[in-house]
Length: 258
Image (tube, rainbow, N blue to C red; front, side, top):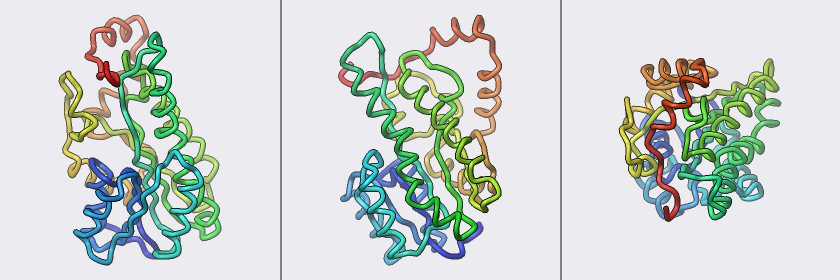
């Protein structure tokens, strides 16, 4: 594994699931990690596993000011980060016909799309000035096509993919690399409630190792695992007359209180 040369790895959504697995992966290699999530107690518990390596920052990625404060604290302790991983995300079933789901749509977009912006923004100028850095956005294969019953999640991940592409091109030639990671299913609390079969599901630890390898290689866009990459390509090119009846029969994620 390539060890960053100057600063820490920043991970949002680090209180559990993939975020915690990514944090453990880097910290286990002796790399300083800045942990960001809303649940302070969970961050503190994780940090105790790696004395002196982890700093904790109880911040909500939906709050731009809080994320700027966290970035300032991270830079003060670790220096300008080498890698910033915008991993925080939420998934919940939504139906447009349900007026009560409007807040769920807002929450999903605020976290999964604006959360990327709020995570990266405080670091971009300094990374550009330094001439290097890696910004990683965790999107999803769900962003390739609209999934019934998950309109908010699918749309947010499609927006994330497009946003990350825009940022990648904006920073082309600056030395700052923007990486888009589109995982399939990962065994976390987020997927544990799914009442349907999840093909090629990965453990959080396995996904973290694969993602770290992709980051080391500076792979600008990747789907994992490879089997899901094949499915993603097929989904992307499948004509609507074929996709629509197939998708309509798919299982649906539970709504809040649904």
